[in-house]
Amino acid sequence: MSPEAGLPEGILAHHYSSLERQNEAMRLGMWLFLATEILLFAGLFTGYAVYRYQFPLAFAEGSRHLNITAGTLNTIVLITSSFTVALALHFARIDKPRAAAICIVLTLLFALGFLGIKAVEYIEHFQEHALPGKYYAFEEVNIAGAAMFYTMYFLMTGLHGLHVVAGMSVLSWLLWRTLQGRYSSLYSTGLEMGALYWHLVDLVWIFLYPLLYLI
Amino acid sequence: MAESALPSEKLHPDREEPHAHSAVPYVIVWIVLLFFTALTYVTGTMHLGKWALPIALAIACVKSALVVLIFMHLKESSGTTRLVFVTALIFLGLLMFFTVADVATRFKLATPAGAPFGTERSQPEGLLEHEMPAEPEQ
Image (cartoon, rainbow over all chains, first blue to last red; front, top):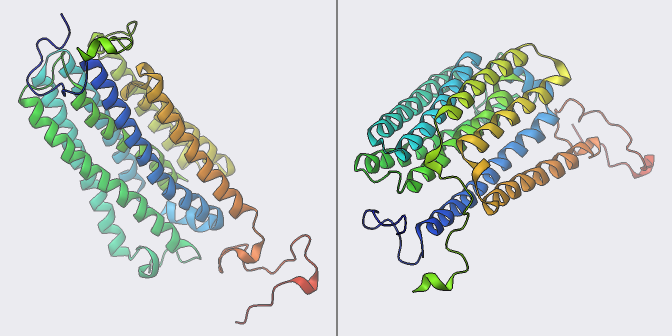
């Protein structure tokens, strides 16, 4: 009769009249959460805009001393991970849990790769003393506002890095559930929510990359 | 049952079932995203002066629109969900616009010491010489 017929136990909560309503509620809730995430990063982007406006030279100089190869590579890695997580959801929905699980594992590997490349960059900054605030002692960029560029750089990439770690935790849990066979053509909204979070991590990086590395 | 109390059981009867989609759009979007990454890299390393920021932001907006509409399925989402996203964008715009507008229209002594155009002591419009703030001591 209804699409809920073959659902495994415990997926449809008793206070929803149908699975479709539950799915819609989950999507709305997730997008509300993503909206707060966008506003969280909005604060940092606004701070960046203000200090970039006040110290244009320092921001241009600081940007030129970042590892642009690492930044570009990380952009490619993160975009590809976004693609694999979209594929994971697609495979779960056409009842191919094994292919979905492989795609989630690939996404996790890309995420690890991203953090690895980021770590190499951070080590470089520490060796050059290109550190935020009063710890700044980078000799190559020694103009007013340079410390502010690196402060914004560390705050933005740091908060983004924390989101990568959080996303990886969520995806690991979803991998476990996918392997349990929880997601199928009948129900895949749980995996969809995790994928949405991961796309947001990608979305933030799409703006961080040009603003920090390129201009 | 409670179900009969609700006005319509099917929220969006006309909408296509999500699992009817193929993976082809994802592949296309992925390739286009990689292309735009290359484009933003090339234009970014050319150092185009005052055009660098608008070009980079335009490319980033196109890329994120693709991610949001296709990867995050906002293209086929309900109006409520779209409204949430658009509201977030509006508040992002309000926050950035008014903060930057404030900073950009302050008179120069109010900018931090050491900023390129913050140190020079100029006379703001509408302020007479005797109304100027005292010279800070070195």
